[in-house]
Image: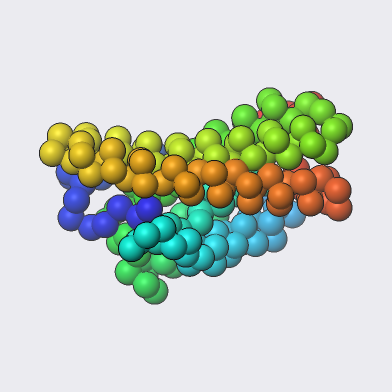
Length: 204
């Protein structure tokens, strides 16, 4: 789901970098020293999980877990995902440095949205409802990732309309898989480490 170098228009790259920088600054301001292990762990988990391939015909889909990262980190997802994407760009040439801002926005903005949706939908002590809320959030987060990427492509050139639609349809199975994975992960955390999940009644 990485946007490659040389695709996006220069003004769009600048706008994406500005948005990524704003999210990074805000996320860092909300990060306390005791949060660093969780941020680092989520960053590492995202880095690794994106190498998990799901075969779909002649191609492969890649897990992202942006919904789960968002639930656990909120705005801190911006620094966590930016570091992971930077390492992927430098070490494996996924995406690139010029489009790092755009790829960060693609991944981190829906993650932040996932955090607020989960807080809104998880006002229950029923583990099954918590799992359903988390699953819905996980699926919507990956949908947001794909929609923002498609929007970047369309804003660059209307000729990308067909490829953007293809990318959206191609990722529908991944939306379902991400929903299931997020539901299972949050259900487990709800049982053993509920303190890691956001408190719906607490401050955002």
